[in-house]
Length: 107
Image 1: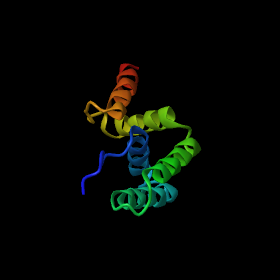
Image 2: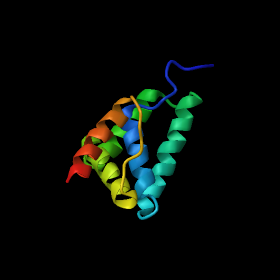
Image 3: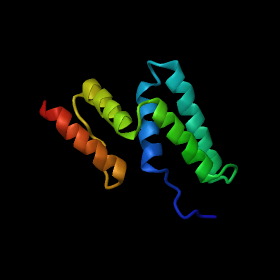
Image 4: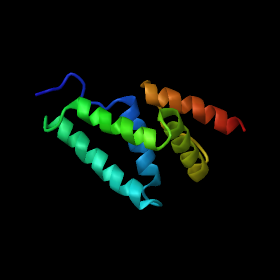
């Protein structure tokens, strides 16, 4: 059965990409990445509600400084690692990240 939207929120996307970026250097991020991915799978299979998932995402985001901070840290991580920001898209996260990337690359 198809859900209204099977994509996570921009906040969840930001958190997921942040945790993926830092999981190789921080075991806590690795565990949180596994957890949040498992929880998303549970949302898709109706084992937990999207509201419960979003609440957990918000709690984790707050722990890492909030949405804007997580976006900035993630973009900075990849620019420092590869010298560029390559993620493109029309969703809110991609647009927010591109603004941060443009600022960082102009420095």
